[in-house]
Image 1 (cartoon, rainbow, N blue to C red):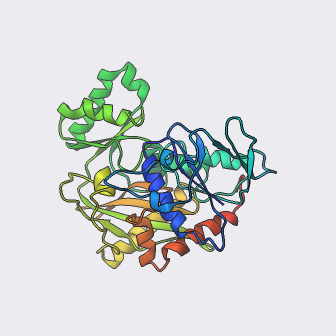
Image 2 (image 1 turned 90 degrees about the vertical axis):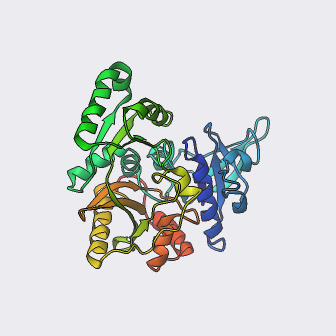
Image 3 (image 1 turned 30 degrees about the vertical axis):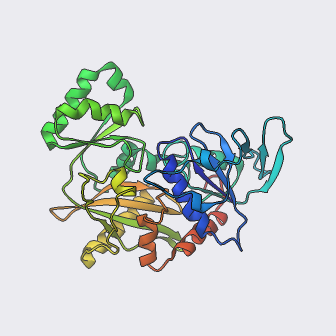
Length: 367
């Protein structure tokens, strides 16, 4: 099996950290593992199978470039469904066959990996893979269409506004007015986010118009399409969904407590200065059942497969509002998804194995 990680998105480093944790957990008596890293410029590199080098150190995330066995060698995945042999080549050298790949565990976060692009390549290749298919991956990556899908299925979402790149480039004044109208209706602060990024990267909390342009520029560094969301006052609740033989099931939920010195749950609060989540979340039995029900409904609404982490707000008036789903949630040692399943009776190694086995038992193509 191949574990593919890194990638071209701004979540490159977190993907490497996640892959390190998974490589550590894979049962090597059952699986021969081929680690493949994708560099930030898109090169598929053969990397060292050394999970200890794939951790956050001195507040810095690792990169594929640091792990690659060569500065210019490349791994090529077959696109012929009848051939699953992976080939490695370097300039001036004879290409070397690395063996056949039976399944891929794509540990990529963000665009060019978690968004359906890699899933489409694997579908063309006829290689089974862990996690959501092309459609669900794309829906799970794009916050606008995710919310549109949820709304169409009757799931509760918070107020939001989308500004597309052409609108900002051609009608900047009108776009600002739309934000002004939105703020007038829902109040400040607002959250300005890249529409297709994760790990809380590129997000800015804006308290007035004074910081709006800077916040939009920061979001657009990661995605030309941005989404503006109103503040929802309440508690942050997460719930994991895992596909079993009889269908998807929800884990016990978790609560994300506020992180001191951080105004909201940004990248550093999530990965650098994080505090332990509350697992299980201190909810009533009725609240627990409701968020589990909504998490499974979100999984089904987006046609997900394998796994999902669903993120909610429990508002001050007692309503659950879904914020987003993550079709390839983090598997770092501090990530909430494996912690929730640990408390639900599925340990880390078993969780990884279940996902691999589910992928091996699922066909590619239309299903």
